[in-house]
Image (cartoon, rainbow, N blue to C red; front, side, top):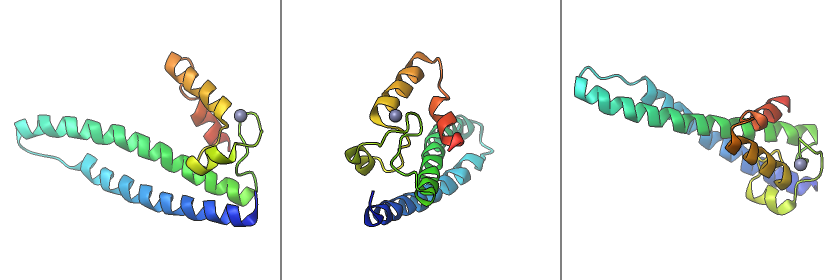
Length: 128
Ligand SMILES: [Zn+2]
């Protein structure tokens, strides 16, 4: 990958990171919010549940974005963490924070569906 491409992706990722940090911070506020009213409490409970689920997803994405930025600095950006093959430029352009090539991603998704190894990607992200 050329320096120009790298700095382009870095900009995209930094923007995404800021956006996600904003969302995660805002959701934190929702999660903490409490209500004295009992009926409201039920409503809030499901809202909180939803907020927490979303927060999980956003936090996960934020971690992926951060680790992609780290890989840009380390010079391993665009390389699959699992098989160490180059990730297709089309895939990187579509999902710049991806850490897996399409084959490994499909494998990870399959694992997740089967529920056998839902921490597969997490593991790779934290190993990065
Ligand atoms: Zn791979």
